[in-house]
Image (cartoon, rainbow, N blue to C red; front, side):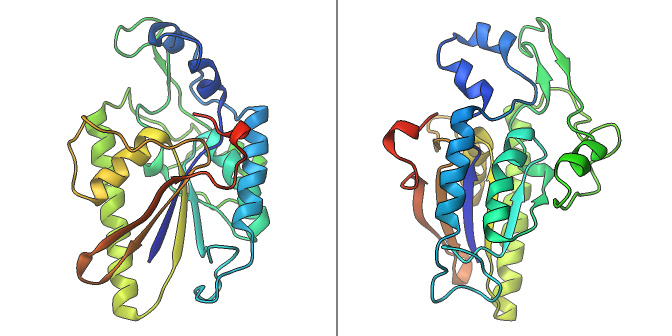
Length: 247
């Protein structure tokens, strides 16, 4: 199994974070930010890149330049928006995977000081069905939203990453035993992507380094025989011109 990890396009939170200290940012950030005008252009470049001619060894049903067979995104608005042009370009139906959401969950204000802090439930099932009718919804998204907890600390994020990593390894084992192959693309978030890569390489807990990803950057890993995991490349942004690369 091949895994493509893609960070979402630039969000409004990403944009305001460039010019604010952390305290000010925490007060101005959105619980569920949209992608920016630059983010829209990044998704167009990304979708066009992914939709290129399939490789000769693409798995059956694989779409585009990477032979993608499955496309997942989190229920956060910025990944839903990023996945939409990808799905259209590849002719794939995205599936929402709650566990690949960003660290912290859905909140506004400062969870560390309590200043103006409150929790947001996230998009409801009806919201997503209306705006993203082609997406496959999971059971955890209800009529009141999908986020049902308080602020998620980094330990909680690591626990989710371990859970996702185990599921990916389970799928890779099943494919190897069945002599099948898939290319799974997930559209996720910066801190969760760092946590997932660390989980896959048994590096949790580790806070002294961070696997950074620019907006719409792609990381590629292959699950090989005997539990071998190959990191083919990290944070690739070749689909973007230099002036469109953002953090």
